Length: 298
Image (tube, rainbow, N blue to C red):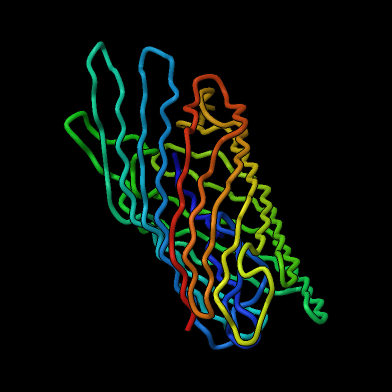
């Protein structure tokens, strides 16, 4: 499994006085980072892909710690940097023997900017539309080896390639709930003879305030229920220019979770469950992805 830092899923919602509100967990939001404010997010992502009925009986377990720093350049423009640390562990049967291959290390750094293009504010509600664009630099190691030789690209912490990504996110927020939607595309480029397929995403999120039921004076804490849907399509990989017919396809995730929100920080967690996986040939299916983290603004 690839942890694509299209992780555009890294933005905290901050209103005009610097308060934190609910936010999507698996993707972006159009609500602003206050001008001159910083956002910090630490996110742990764990996954397993092991539904392999073939003779190789493949099982991939991975986790990453994603560190994010965002800055509000102006009330409309925000920039973000994302740096993951990854650990991947792969078991496979080769020639009748069970083999383990693993790697860990810092991944590739990503930088992106997001600009609020449309802003419609009314008492008790707001609607925002914000395009974003960014790039991933090949800062992670992409030449790790074990006793069997060089590890395959899917296990390397870094890709060795410069990639670009972009999209548009829209947010509608009232006091009791918030709805977000995003469409994005990522161009993954070739390195070391391996060209990962490009990725298209369509994401949606609903955050509903479970507690308190009614708002009082001041800025209390909030508990939100979260339900998100993520449609991810990946083109086939290419190896030395030839298409890999055991890669690519479309997956639909349904992601329930919770967020605990205060004025300056959020604690959150969701579980991404694949409800539909239309993958090519012997592409490895995903079992689950767990995301848990904290966000701060200052």
